[in-house]
Image 1 (tube, one colour):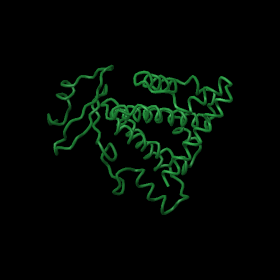
Image 2: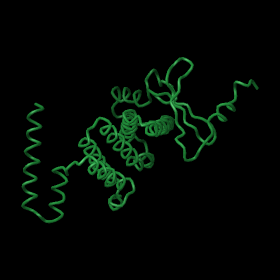
Image 3: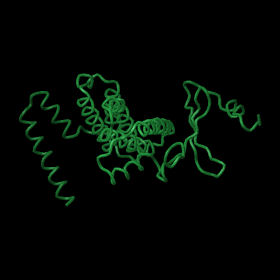
Image 4: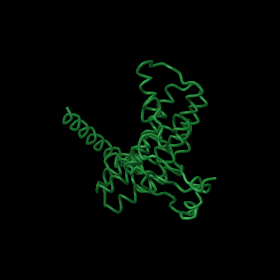
Length: 250
């Protein structure tokens, strides 16, 4: 075997550490950036844009992009088994890259890849051939929403926008609650680890940046404490702000 065909020198130079970062951004032979992820059995190499494996299905930058074009031509089509397998592979690839971006603290790109995965989930839900296959993806939606909320909040903090960070977390919590309701997992929401971590992150940001509770949070607390007069005033303020925002956007 040609000595250039094995990875011995790379594996020795970059030993696997279970608790280590295990991710780096390096230059390819042509000067392009690629992500490398050290796993216990070797090294994964991912492209930084398009599909992580660099394949362009029918000239598109992702399978999702190709399928969305097909949807425009035939809105009511149903996915076949082969395409379902290809979709599952794209889910896995984007998961690996999303995790890599989070470890590299490239939160903007983690947001991009999380949004791709959620869009692919939405597509699968619309065109799935089997309920069981749909559930295989939907049961992981909260995990992707957690990453999206986390990355969006950290990106907002990088930009010195703590209020936006809190809003991103609150939006994520609402979407996770909706997902659990659709799956019939309502009772799981309050004690869910992902929910608890997002709430802890929200409170940490609120404390560190001295951000006051939003009107929606004040309203929720007033209702919980049965302070109905205060709750009515807060609802009026929220409605007024929403009307003003709507008028300004017209």
